[in-house]
Each structure stands twice: as C-alpha cells, then as structure tokens.
Figure 1 (cartoon, one colour):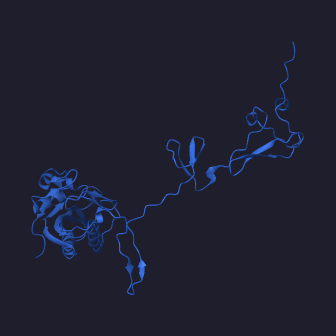
Figure 2 (cartoon, one colour):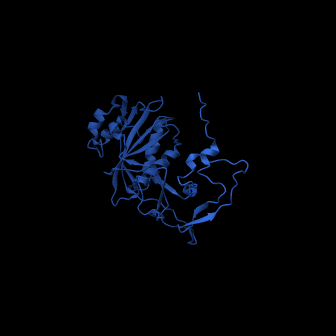
Figure 3 (tube, one colour):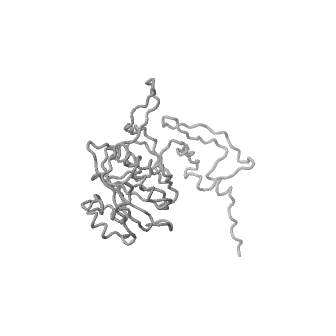
Length: 310
C-alpha cells in the first residue's frame, strides 16, 4: 500500500499565480476619468507577517484587482433612489442594486403671501408673515349662511352655552339669526362622562372659514377649553357644521363637519330651528331625515325650547 499524496501547501498553491518580487502597476483614476498607473514598492516574499490573499482576490491573469472606487455614499449630499425609478437628468452609479444619483438643484416653490407687511408707527417694516393660501382663507363677497354646534358638560353648562351665544353675537362679521333648542344628550365616544347640553346657532358671516374658526376658538379659550383627552369632557365646544355649500378639507378644518350626518345632538336641535335645512357633502341630505335615523337618536333625553335668558 502506498502512502497518500501529501496535500499541497499554501505557497505551492499560490506561488505560480503571485510573484511578490515584482512591483505591479496600480491603476488609479484621475478626475477626468482617464486611467493612470503608478509603481508600487517591491514586496519581499520573505517579509514577516505576510498575509497571502485568498483565491477570490486574484484575477485570472495573476494581477490584483483594481482598488474599489471611493464610496459615493460618503457624500452627505447624495440622494439615493431605487433603480426602478431613475431620474433622466442625473448621472448614476450602480452598486448592490441601488442607483446613486448626484443631486439636481431645483427651485423650491414659493408660498403665496396672504398677510400684509406689518409696520410700526414710523412706517418701518417689522415682519412679513407668509402662509399657503387655500379655500379656507377666502372671504365671501356676500354673507354666507353658517351653522355652529355648541356643547358643554362641565360646570354650569347651560350658563356657559348662553355666554357662548352672546360671544358669537358680539363677533364682528357674524350675525346670529336663530338659536336651536337646548338638548340634553348622552356622551358619544371617549371616556365615561356626564351628559352634555347641546344646541346649534344659525348665522350669516362675512368671515372666511378660517377666520370663523379662530373666532370660535377664542370664545372656547375664554371659557378655559382644553384639548387633553380626545372626545373627553369639555367646558365648551364650538364646531363649524356648514359654511354655505362649501365642501373642503385642510389640515386644520373640514367643512362640512365630517360626522355631522350621524350626530343626533347636532341634527335634532338643527332640525327644530330650521326644518328645511340641508347638509351638503358626502353622506349629507335633508337634516330632518338624517335626524330621524341618526345612530345616537336614543341618546337625546329631552329638549328645552326657551332656554336663553331674555
């Protein structure tokens, strides 16, 4: 029996492919994209701590691979987007399935100024306030019919609602034309809490929707309204239900109120104050029909017609 052949050593495997006594040229790239080659200092095969590269690091020709280009991700201004969505005006590099595009400078959209320049008594400009203009900032040419829902369940709720009606009557640009009956209703949603007193105020206004919102919020604030718990107890709540026939929604306001068509504590007093009322928008319709089918209709405990002081 013959002895098995000895396994070749590392040097025997790689010696034919590598010659450490030569100085291979190291290709580099210049800024204009052309290639150059520079000589590397000779490396002795007997140098200490010499680490031989693995087979994957050796090209078929026996010469080391070119060094990898600088990582474009190191540039903090680089924008990365998927390959499937390239930008035709960007020069790209592809690495690991990701296209790395050089950022393209594009002009930013300029907001539309809806506020005048503010000046002091001497006429010097102090600041300029910019805001994006939308339908909620448009002032009507003629008075617009609006319906406001009011409610409270903390403290002397009836007095609070009476004071709120007076505050609305004193609001410039708002003319109150009718007030609905007072309804005692069970709370809908939120934590367990006391019954509410609710009513509606019908008015005409020359304020924009957002100006009307700010006016109602000022009255709420005067009665120490806070918004700490969603649908929680409140000293005073004033909601804009409709603003003419406007149907619009922004980050801070939705008209008509998105849940008005299913809230009996709004619909029942509104129907009593205006039997011909109509709720515009999706899910809207005649208020009398909506009031009769509202999910919380059974939560309306009673109505008081003459609840405001003379």
